[in-house]
Image 1 (cartoon, rainbow, N blue to C red):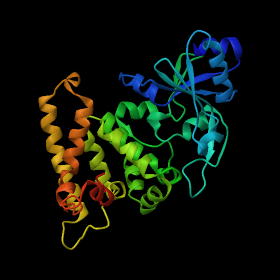
Image 2 (image 1 turned 30 degrees about the vertical axis):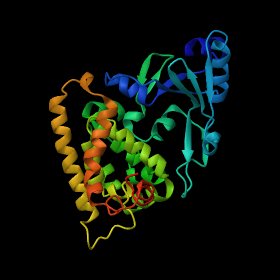
Image 3 (image 1 turned 120 degrees about the vertical axis):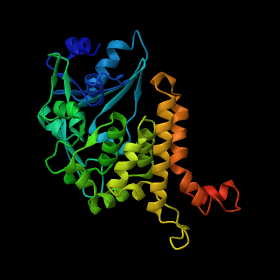
Length: 319
């Protein structure tokens, strides 16, 4: 249908599929219903209007509004059948020191657009004009084969400071795909400035969303291990102010106890439920959370206090 829209209304446009869809297709995994299209000579909002015009007479298309802070990116989102579709112009971005939302964007070549992306495995394009996979960083296909999480940038620290959420995405994809993390990326993640930027630039909701996606995978232990190795675990799971370090175990001891229990739980569950079809994904997610957070719950003063549910919720990070 996208090809039909291009041929009818914008024949000069080169359209590429970007990001997760092409990554999962190459890994022979179930592809997402979220599809990102990038365009070379027309804005995302303009092409979305053409798409809407082309199909709205026969089928329902729902437009989804962009967040206020990112409206300047001119990404248009549509709900069509079971698909969430994004259209956006190829672009490069410039960040301000105090925000992870780009303060300035400009039109770019596919090479520039590929190099701005968070990870090499997410920098691949599928050109629907030529039916070819494009690897402009010359790293994406190689890292898919090696099972490696890396950034296109030669200096990973710079890209993590621009948008510190990228390190949590890297950890989540490592857990989701059972990939390793490239050494220079792990070293950059251990820089104290990344930790500070994560706390200042990224909302708790956004952090929680990435962690929740990690716990939806079959291997959250890999993600927790990377959080421990990069010293970011306590920037993600923040202990309550009432925690008395003199009277209770150190937070690191609690995290490691949770990691140990999660490891044992995951190993046991994997032996019981061998086939993916045997898993109830929602219950599995709750099982992973319960295993990792049990030591936190056991040792939390607000959980063990006599206060009611409301007071516990106000005091404890577990809620």
